[in-house]
Amino acid sequence: MAGLSTHILDTSAGRPGANIRIELHQLKNGDRVQIGEYRSNNDGRVDSPLLTEQTAEPSQYELTFYVGDYFRANDTPLAEPAFLDDVVLRFAISDPSQHYHVPLLISPWSYSTYRGS
Image 1 (cartoon, helix red, strand yellow):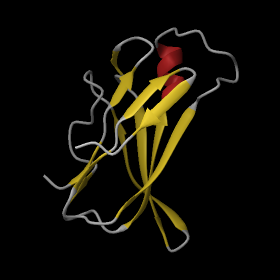
Image 2: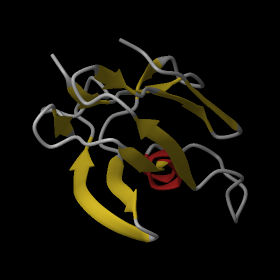
Image 3: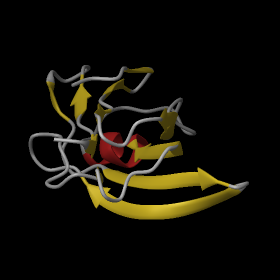
Image 4: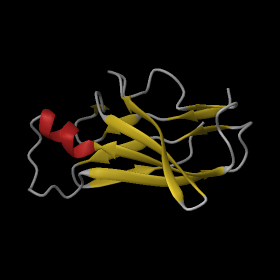
């Protein structure tokens, strides 16, 4: 399956990051164009691909994860302002015929990502 997918793991609680708002933007010709807005499900995933082989194109993209709202909703103690509120991951798709999986591992104090499968 080609396209773009994501999932979120809350490493501080040892569970999926459920009900997190996510935005996808494409950076093209100096513009930042919103492609979509999503919510993670109870498994920390988005129910459908963010991009498909037909809608993906070689370009830079940004995924914005609103993790501060998630931690506040789960009564996680945070400083104000929170150390991490919005996590923005900028990455590129070079070959739309391949699958790009961009997971986010989060805690209130850190995050990590990688290109998964």
